Structures are given as C-alpha cells and as structure tokens.
Amino acid sequence: MQIDENVSSRKSRPKSGRLAAVIQWFDSDYSDGNEAQGDSKNKADWVRCVPFIVLHVGCLGIFYVGWSWFAVGAAAALYFIRMFAVTGFYHRYFSHRTFKTSRWAQFLFALWGATAAQRGALWWASHHRHHHRHSDQEEDLHSPGRSGFWWSHVGWIVCSKNFRTDYARIKDFAKFPELVFLNRFDSLIPALLAGGVFGIGCLLERYAPGLGTSGPQLLVWGFFVSTAILFNFTGSINSLAHIMGKRRFETGDDSRNSLLLALATMGEGWHNNHHHYMHSTRQGFYWWEIDLTYYALKFFERLGLIWNLRPVPAEIYEQARRSSDQGTALGQSPTAVPVLRKKPSMSSERSQ
Ligand SMILES: [Zn+2]
Ligand SMILES: [Zn+2]
Image (cartoon, rainbow, N blue to C red):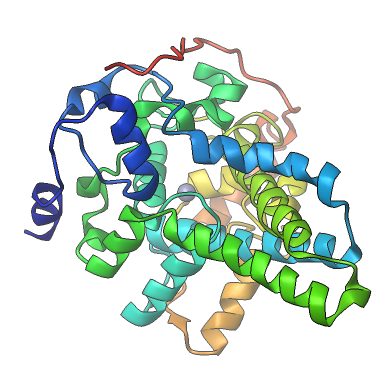
C-alpha cells in the first residue's frame, strides 16, 4: 500500500537526536529509528524548531532594513494571499473535503498552501482532523481550556510528539505521491518564496529605485513579518477562537464565533459554527457573518476550478433559529474564559 511504502522507504540509520532534527529541517519524514522519543509527552525539540524560531527572530530585521510603502504592502498582500490558501485549501479542502476539485488543482492548492510555512497539507490536515475528533477533550492537541492559552497557540507546535505526520489519519490524500512530496519536503516551498521575494527586492532596488525598497527589506517584510503574523493569526483559531466570542451552538467544546477573528483570518473566526457543522464550505452561516474565504471559493467555482461546494443544511439553520429564538445563554454568553484545567509541563531538552 502507498502509505506503507512511504513509511518503509524512509532511511532509518541511527543518528544522534540533534543531527536527526537538523535533517528534519529539510526532510520532515526523516527517521533516526528512535521513534519512541516521538511519543514522549510534551517535550519541546528546540533544535527541530530552529527554522520556526528564525522566522520570528527575523522580524527584528525591520530595525536594520527600515520600511517602505511597497514592502509593507507586499507583506499585507502576501498575508492575505496565503491566509486564503490556509483556510480555503488546508482547512476547507484537505481537512474537511467541503468541495471537489481536479488532481492538478489539488496539487497547486497544496503548493499554494505550502508558501504559508505551516508545514505540508497532510501534516496540517491530519492534526486538524484529530482536533475535531477530540475538541477540548483530554486527547485534544491544542485546547486552551485544558492546557492553557500559550500551549494551544504555539506550545503544541514545538512539541516533538506532534512533528510527525500520521499518514494513516489522512489516507485519502496520502495516496497522491505529489502531495506526500510537498509534505515531506515542507521547507522547500517557503525557502523558494523567501528567495524569490529577496530577488524581486534586489531587482526593484536596481530598476525601480523610486519604490525605496531592496532585497533585504522585501525579505524581512514580505517573508518574515508577513509569515510570522500569518502563523499567529492562524494559531489564534486554536487558542482565541476557543476562548473569545459568542456561542450559537452547544457543541460540547469551547468553540466560539468572533467577528474580529473572522476578519483577521478571512472567515475562520466563525469557529463555533464550524465545530457544530464542519462539512460546509462556508463558515459564516449568514450574509452578515463575513467569510472572505468563502466568497473567494465561490469565485473559484465560477471559474470551474472547484465544484460541489457543500452547503449548510436546512436542519442546521433550523437549529440556529431555535437557538436565537430561545435567546439562550448560548447566544448571549459573554466572552468567558474557560477554567484552565491542566497545564502541560514542557522540557527544553531533547531526549537522546
Ligand atoms: Zn477548534
Ligand atoms: Zn476544521
């Protein structure tokens, strides 16, 4: 079977843990044969996280390269272009299959999403499916109610047990070798984007000096700043969207709806809607629940790139109507912060 072949083809020569972590910067499926360490509880792997740390530290480069309207505009444009790919493709397609598309478009969508530097589509979607299966339960990888805000926002990402892709959880897409390739070499596309942005900056400095930008400046704003903000707003759906906002549906978890988060994340802020019914393409269930990703996907549908967008069923609207008729505590609930139940301890040392 395809998945087993992929697993068995991985090199498994013994290496020290740190060297394996460095190799995994480039080949995220690399195994050093010490799989047991991946099962260790909530252990941060800082060597493995160096690219992630560099991404954030690189933002300090603004103090060296200054700014220009062009560079800031590029950062904003790259933010929204890639946020759309994260929500429209990584989330609504690869995680939940809320519409259909061709194999070619599917590959391009995974490629587009990879520019966001949030790992490959298969890693992203497989962990997200796990979140829906165990939302705010003991097994949930990033529940702010159970594990604290910072854990749900970023802690789980730097934890060694969450680095590997569980291909068995995403068999429907792991059968496509081109998707496995993008997932395995997940730093390739972000590196190409960073190089491309730097190169364009160099060309503009030479041929359009009136824009006031340069290679280093465009790299810092267009890649580091834009990507770091993109990561943190994506992470806010795992953290803030389970803390901040109102609840329309009793979902059995802490998910909430927030206009502010929906605007920042192009529609992902309607998280209580989404947890109640994850199969629809739209997450803002009404016209006043602004969902920019959905509007863009409708445009893609008109272009014939995607089809069979799944609607919100009438029975879900009926449940929403009953909820608002009751004027229940659900609809009126304040932005309560759930009790923090248990905070995982995190070791800074990688097990050898
Ligand atoms: Zn959630
Ligand atoms: Zn989801």
